[in-house]
Every structure is written in structure tokens, then in C-alpha cells.
Amino acid sequence: DIVMTQSPDSLAVSLGERATINCKSSQSVLYSPNNKNYLAWYQQKPGQPPKLLIYWASTRESGVPDRFSGSGSGTDFTLTISSVQAEDVAVYYCHQYLSLPDTFGQGTKLQIK
Amino acid sequence: EVQLVESGGGLVQPGGSLRLSCAASGFTFSSFWMTWVRQAPGKGLEWVANIDRDGNEKNYVDSVKGRFTISRDNAKNSLYLQMNGLRAEDTAVYYCGRAPYGSGSQYYMGVWGKGTTVTVSS
Image (cartoon, rainbow over all chains, first blue to last red; front, side, top):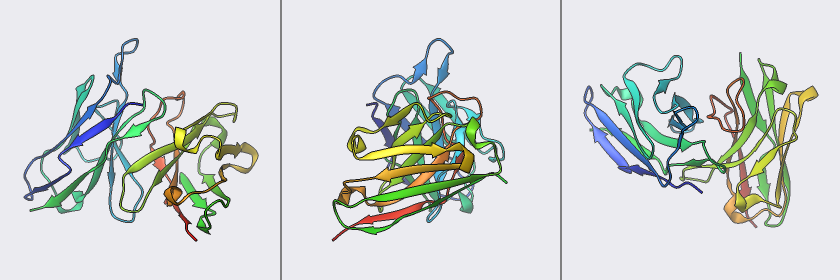
């Protein structure tokens, strides 16, 4: 199975500041025939299901604010929130869907400083 | 409105069985791969199983193979998870999730239900 490791486990950011969450996979999730990274990011607020933010590592889901962006390729990926808002307090998960079983990172908890 | 609504969770003794359901509405259910994902209390997300559009291809995480069975009834717009031989470590919120249109077996989940809680305890 592909192991997904996120860092940090938690972070506290001031309102309006940048937040960066990293995700590293134990094997590449880049599929060479189509040059796509099979990597998604989700946001989960307490008591709610996950919400898709980013897929194919960098494609923002419709309706997701443009302060959220994804980058990276191969085994190293980043979710960036350019200017953190109060409503961004949540746990964020990366997800690889290249190889079954799908696997998720352990989650990164974002709090406001 | 696209919607997924899970049901069937509850308290069950170790070794017992439960059948979870996920009712789909607002889209053509038979056109989409579907997935079950679970989340133990205070823990992260764990992919459990998925099923293709026709119900012919099914995949499972190793920890549930031989105990859980995913199925679907496209006429009833419903997804199921039959869980037998339940263990304490199966205690979790179980979510159903939908693939994007036109996807194969490798996909992210763009639509999620609110989940149903399964507690395995004596």
C-alpha cells in the first residue's frame, strides 16, 4: 500500500497569513501515460463529512475559494492557503487514488493563532 | 440536488452483523463508481471498498476482506455495505462517496454523504 505522510500534524496561523501543508507519498502517484498526479486534498470540519478541495494535485474543485491551491508532483505535494480565514479551521487530508487500496494522510489540523 | 444519505448504523456486539445503506438522489446513480470510507473516533479517514457502475468489480482494503461485502442496486439508487464478523476496530463513522462522472477505478470523491455511525461493543 502507498503510505501518505502529512506534515505538520497541526499548525496555528494568524488570520490573513499563509498556511502550508505538506504530503509525501511512499511511492510516486504520477501516472506517466497521462502525466497526471493521482492526488486529492479534502477539508473536514468538526461533525461534517470531508469536502473535496483539490484533485489531480492542482485542480481546484468548483466553488472552492481561490486562496486554496495545490502543487507538487511525484511524491511531494503541498496544499497552500494564501490568506487564512476563520472558516478555514479544519482538518486537511491528502488522498492518493492511483493504487488500490486508496490511502489518506493522517490529517493536519489547522487552527487560528 | 446531488445527495447521498447513509443509514443502517448502530450498536452491535463483536461478531455481529450490520447492513449499511446509502441512498443516492439528484444524479444518475448507475453512471458512477461508488466508495465506502470510514473514520474511527478521533482518527483519520480510511478507504474501505469501492464498486463499479454495474456492480461487477469490487475492491476492498485488506482489513475487511472476507468480512464486508459492497453491493449496489441501480434500480433503487442504493449502495450497500454488508458487514459481518464485526470487531471493535470497525467502530467508525461510515461515509459513502461518489466518483466523478466518467471515471474508472481510480478516482477522488467529489460527493460525500453525512455518514452513519457504527459502534461495535459488548
